[in-house]
Image 1 (cartoon, rainbow, N blue to C red):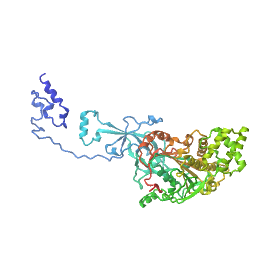
Image 2: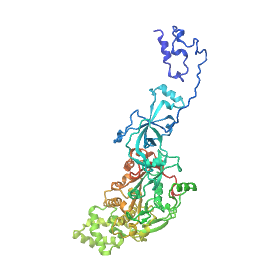
Image 3: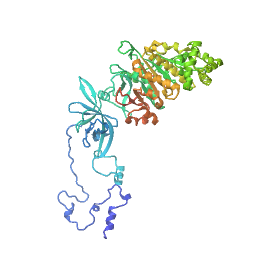
Image 4: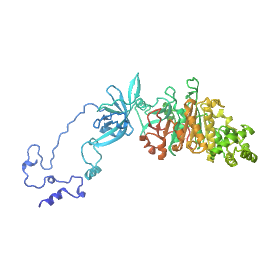
Length: 625
């Protein structure tokens, strides 16, 4: 018992005296037992013994590793290798060798060959370090030692990559093809990084040709290959041989303020205006026509597409080499709505300007244009079934807005309709009050848009309708919906008034689309949503594509949203907005953290869901100095 205090003092020093664990003497592990014999010691002479401060030295033997490492690791069967029809039961894991660990990222694309030459194309969905040797590193000693070291020995740990099997790649008739995963690879199969553009495009089902959107990326880093150019271009299908061009299956560009959505939208629209891009007017027909683009522009930004972008000759050569259309589009015209009390002046673009007005005659086909302030069903029914027919009988279809309001001021008419029970006097008064709110819109001192349709819709032309100069939102909304409805009605009609619209492939772009296609419980909203939903459904047949840009996708009416085939999502911070775009959860989690120009593309009929980095340069003029 007398020796116990000394024994404890040796084994339990204070933490402050631990130092770097090099201060212990040779006796500390053996105690001071005098009964030790010479046979227990190694310093008593004989071969290999040391004396004093001398230490044993061993010769280092040079070794040569047999063979050469290939790939980044191998498939591990330690936890099983399993493919299952239920994706949740699928289990594929790769051991990543020490020298390759810094290059592997979540979302990286890998290839694992089968013995017969086919290859499994995979995506990394998880990365996990585990210990190579059983040890508890959650201790004070381990932590203090790690804090003083320069790093870890990678070979003391395992890095395991969880893989999502995307497709099987195989050769047929000299062409690389893909099919769904139907074979489990063998254990210890060498896993390699997918570094060939054809492998990656085939694995992800990305079309070789089409409308350029951006470059493939993983975690915001552009995927690079050994080819020239080293990037992998992502394109939307634009050829009837591979199905319907996706432009007529409708596109949504969603992004918050400062995410680069207008920059991206301009770059995409410029591709549709390429001189060589044409579509058949009729299915199976030989006649092909360039598309017309009509862009509604609440912030007055898209008329700048007339002018060249700000980039140097090197950038231009690189864009040319990748087949990206760039430069200002000469056939760009800004159609300026003439509004009482509002003036338009633009020094930020050089596009031609044409002023127009909305004629009141358009109300006969779309009575809800004057229902923007909230008609109820009784009021709307009285307007459509009684008042407008009465007005046409009295003034004809070309009667003006002023004549209509004059008719509504007629007390004799009010009394007559009330006495006959056709329109109650209170309903008559309510309609009169509401239609007087559109005096600034209709029949202004400019040519009516119905006389300008041939110039408004031009094959290969870009028409921009800026509304930034219109201060009242209801007025701007009426202008946009009147023009959009004119285009949609002509496209869907079997007996159109304007053959130019019917016979021209048409892209209708709408920035801040949530302001116009919202699912509100009003007569106007129901009519608008019904019209645009039908237009979206008939898009493929009629060569009509919707191109919607918004920062609030959750506010776009669901019937319209369901018709969208291609969703392009830039940075969004609002949870409701992120949920609304309905992209896969693994990409959804990245959306709030994406930098300007980074995007997720979800287009099931075009490719697997992917990340892209858009062009750093706008291919047309963008921004105001």
